Amino acid sequence: MKDYRIETKCVQGGYTPGNGEPRQVPIIQSTTFKYATSEDMGKLFDLEASGYFYSRLQNPTCDTVAAKICELEGGSAAMLLSSGQAANFFAVFNIATAGDHVVASSCIYGGTYNLFAVTMKKMGIDFTFVDPDASTEEIEAAFRPNTKALFGETIANPALTVLDIERFADIAHRHGVPLIVDNTFATPVNCRPFEFGADIVTHSTTKYMDGHGSAVGGCIVDSGKFDWMAHKEKFPGLCTPDDSYHGITYAEKFGQGGAYITKATAQLMRDFGCTQSPQSAYLLNLGLESLHVRMERHCLNAKKVAEFLESSDKISWVNYPGLESSKYYPLTEKYMPSGTCGVVSFGIKGGRAAAERFMKELKIAAIETHVADARSCCLHPANATHRQMSESELIAAGVPSDLVRFSCGIENYNDLIADIAQALEKV
Ligand SMILES: *Cc1c(COP(=O)(O)O)cnc(C)c1O
Image (cartoon, rainbow, N blue to C red):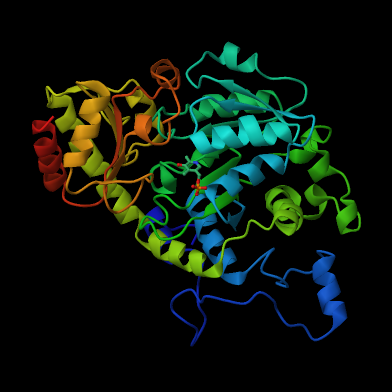
């Protein structure tokens, strides 16, 4: 599959059935797997042989779909998880532990911010959040001797800022740590962060990858390019023996391309069990088969909707990185030349009340706390996800009270624009 283009990988990647085998990825709905001898089983537990023994750790359906995402991103190994939250938690916790520190972009998904700033902080991991547009010197100043990773989102949800991946990768590598990029909004169809130096990619597969609002899930992909052994003292979990597996050293036994995902599976999945169900993996794969076709339409619709909004006198501002007027347009030309995402945010003249009225009048886009779905949906964060915040707190969070987040589906854009126009008329 390696030599094929992204569209072919979306449809055919990860699974090549043999003679007489099912054409579609089989759902292996089994918690456990049978072996002839205890010795066979013992080898699996010692990580001496590869194979399945319990679906909390690994399942063939999940691995098949992970292999497809691995091919799409151009990585060396990948794993599926129960959610995007689990993916970002594992991605960081696999290399940072109590007493460690991580530098993260301040423009990230609210759930990830909470995970880092509140929950993982309670576990003893310290985070410093930096403005992704800050100068290289300012970002470098956030690093400490115990910093273990740099984290950002290709296109941030919901701020829609675009990460300068190459610059971030250079900064991370100068400090001997990997760059972890949450590539949920761009998807590998529009951006492959490994090509610009990122080391680990994460996804909420719940969004465009599934694309039909049917299954919550996550994924981690390793580029296999980060040389853990060259920074042995920083990553003892990968570079020194693991007592819970008879003294295996992951970076030695599984090499640069396999160590990170093997450790996350053998330790974190074993202990936390944030596993994706085979049924969900099957649904995710159905979504992936059309990802390239859907992304093109999501991006076309969003561009048309953003252009219409920009021309409307009822709108005070429009934020869409694919618009030529966006300050991120030069970065999108470099990192996402074929499109960005389907999410547009904008402010309606008349503030909070106008935004509420507008959304009530929409007929096609439904009000949902979801994005990246085949069906258009929208959210007024000041009234939903950011409801507890005061006006000044909302502005500080980059979510003013007039902000509407509009996720363009794959309907006809003329219908979306007509619907938006009639709703704006009533404001
Ligand atoms: C939704 C989202 C997440 C969290 O994913 P879940 O599947 O909802 O747990 C993480 N990162 C980004 C960018 C997201 O949009």
